[in-house]
Length: 88
Image (cartoon, rainbow, N blue to C red):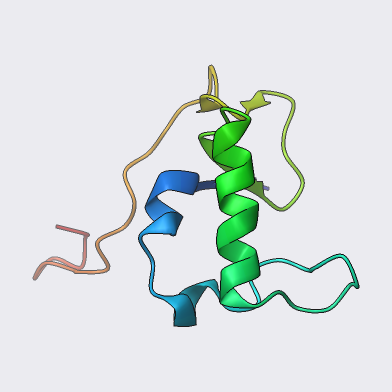
């Protein structure tokens, strides 16, 4: 079984439109956060020098500054197949 680890680039997410930030986190009341609340969460992480946030449970090699250390990183799929059926 292959495990896939994913992270969120905090600076990148701050450039997203409000519609994409909506419900990204839960607020203090346990309800889905507004886009403005989500932006505040991301800014708080930046103030703590957190460049990356784990999506799901972080693995042992995760750091907020570097994401996943010492792990093989593969290129994301393009989703395009050539005439031979293999990815281009």
